[in-house]
Length: 83
Image (tube, rainbow, N blue to C red):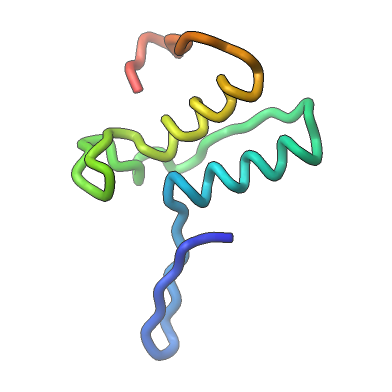
């Protein structure tokens, strides 16, 4: 359930905002009380230069899904960082 590309023997797998949201949604369906951690956020599109032209698209997608699933109406400011 990830996006990928390959050329001969080389495969590259990556998550888009859509695939990571599907994964989080699937996990929440199976285990309601689950914690999530995001690793390697330095690879996130922090300038918003890629698809969708939104900064931090995968982190925002996870946050929006968690807000929706936990009935949170507003974004929570995490450590003073604006996502």
